[in-house]
Length: 502
Image 1: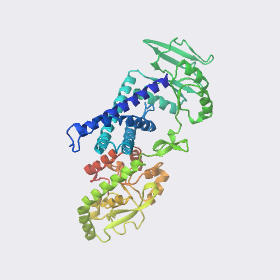
Image 2: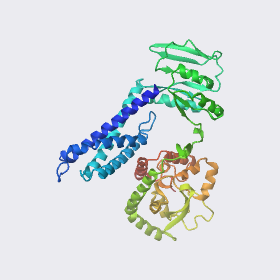
Image 3: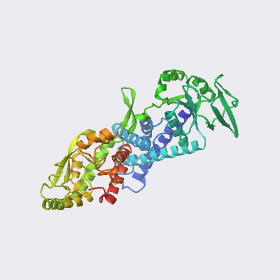
Image 4: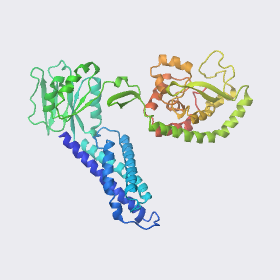
C-alpha cells in the first residue's frame, strides 16, 4: 500500500511539474511576442516551432528534477530546502534546454534569447508556487486524517520519545505512531492499548505470557490509533506487530545501550515491505547543527555542522565585501575626524592593533582607534571595567558609541572578519575560557564579526560568558542572510550606544 501511494504521488508531482513548465513556456512566448510588453522588431515566429520544443522540456525537466531527488517523499522536509532545490533544478534545466535548442535548431529556427530568460523567471515562480500549493494541500488533507502512514518506533528512552513527540507535534506530516518496541517489556501486567475503530473505543492488552493482544477488534481501523502506553512489545515481536497493525514505516531509534540488538532487528526487517529509517542516538553529542554527509558511499553524521558553508559561505563573503565597502566609504569622514581627535587628545599612535582569534582558531591583528593610555597593560591583559582609569577621556566616548571599532571594516574587506559573527577574543583570555566554559571554541566555526547576536542582545564586554556563548551558538546554528540584516539593523538602531562598553 505504501509503495502504491508513493508511486501515485510521484506521478502527481511529475505531471504537475511538466504541466507547469509547459504553461510557463507558452506564457513566455506570449509575453515576448503577443503581449505588447516587449517590442517585436523581427516579426513574430511561428508558435508551432516553439511548441515542438515542449518534447525537450518534458524530457529535461523530468530527468533533472528526478536527479535532484524532487520526487521522493518529503513529509517532514524543510520547505526552504525544497524551494532552493527547485530553483537550482529549474535553472539547470533551462541551461540544458538552451544548449540543446541552439545546438540542433538554431540554423533552421532562430529562437529568441529573451524568451529563455523570461521562461526561466516565469517557470521558477510557477514551479515553486505549484510545489508549495500541492504540499499545503497534502498537509491539510493529512491533518484531516487522510493519507496517513502508520509508524512503529523500534527503541525506547529519550531518543524514541523525541521521535514520537515530533510526529505528534506535526500532524501535517501524516504520520501516526502505533507504538514503540523495547529490549524488555516494562514490569507491569501488560501495556494497554486504546484503539479507536469508527466511533467505538476498544481497549486491549498485550499478554506477556502468550505474546498476543487480548480482546483485539476483529477489524483494525486504518487511522486513529491512540497510544496509552508507548511500549507495546519487544524487539522479538517485530514480525507480529508489523502484521497486526499493518505498519507502513519503521523508525529504528535505539538507545546506544541497545545497539547489540540492531543487527537482529535489521534482519527481522529484511523481507518486510515497509519503509525503514534509522535515527542514530547521537543527539546528546550534537553541539551545533547536524548533517548527513556521504563518504565513499557511507553515510556520515556531522555533529558540529553550520549552515555557513559552500554556497552560503560565498554569499556571506559577497555580503561582507559589498556592505563592508559601502560602510567603509560612508564612515571615512567620521574616521578622519576621530583620527585627528585621537592624535591631539593624548600621546601615542592613532590606531591600535591587537591579536584576536578568528575562524578555525586562526590569530589575526584587529584594528581599532586607540582608546587607552600607552601603558594600559603594563600589569598584564585584563577586561575594561566601569570607571577604568586606563581609558582616555576621548576613549570613553569612542567606546560608548562603538566608534573605536570602525577601522575593523578594513579587517572585513580583507577577509579577516565578517560584518556579523561572534566577537573575536584575545588568545590569552581564550586559554582560560575554554577550560571553564564547554563549547566556547565552537564560536570559531565561523568568522568573527564586528557585531553579533550576543552584542545586540546586550552581552558584550564584562558580562556573562555563558550567555554570550549561548547567543553566539544560536547565531551559528540559525544563520541566514535575513538574520545578518536583522543584527545590522538592530546595531544601527540601538547598538551604537552600549551601556556595557567601558
